Length: 423
Image 1 (spheres, rainbow, N blue to C red):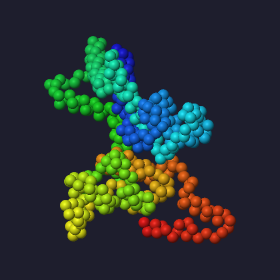
Image 2 (cartoon, rainbow, N blue to C red; image 1 turned 30 degrees about the vertical axis):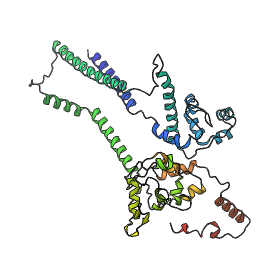
Image 3 (cartoon, rainbow, N blue to C red; image 1 turned 90 degrees about the vertical axis):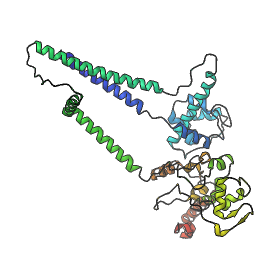
């Protein structure tokens, strides 16, 4: 009987362990962010691609859904020209199937960004395939969106029921063992009979659990790991304000102005192209349009009040003027130097690379983490485009002069620029 009990206990532990790992697998299963993928797709891909139809380039839904090698897809999206130059068979086939039509490279996209795009395309393509099928006479099943909540709850219920059954059977086996020993006249230390109460049962269970060294060791190890992970994540994300979205004094919609109206970012943020700072646009820029556009809007009247402008007389009163207290969103540490013009004018990087799909934001938030690791990864991926750049042409000229043994001063390397010292 004892052998049966030992075998059953070992079996029950195995079942509980497998069930625990299964539950952890369901709860810890991470998927790419479809919403972020949609935002990036609309910002980067919609000019040439649709999910279900051919545009300039092929329909991405069938192409990405049929390709199972996500690592290759990531390399293709980030830098397809490198794959073609390396004579990659898949890359050459795609290139030739599309009449050797070149595709833009997106070296600024991280592996996570590409994974989000792929997840969005596959998800949207499944929905588009399921839509006509759902309206048919047979009412075909909708697209597979992963395990349903009912399935997950059912699995949890099965695990709980299995755990209760195992506990009941263990107690039944223990009782049978005692009866067998008593029948064989073996001395059994009987516990003093006490009136069974819920409190006594809980205390007895707690004492047994505390005496179980393996359980105590397991709890201590798990607690240490969890506390260490929490501390690491907390310290690592100190002063990382990704997702920060403060309320502004005027409800300005980038979705309307940059998205619907297609106003260029640098029409308002003119400093991004020629200086270190992107600059906050002055209210006079707003007045270029809003002297005559939406003059009845309460938000526009906040601009009028700040400028001391009377829309009835169309005159300004400087004595009533007051500054708008904008709330800064993107804020780098004082020891970090970032120059907008080097990235937008010299490198030709679009605003969305750092600020995300700004043309879809009704209220601006910090899209990127802006950490040193994030910047370094971008610098490792982004190729230097030196052709036709006056900056790099000057650098090449200076290097040639050095090779020829000519005297080169700091002024030739940009040493007279104000930003070298005053930033």
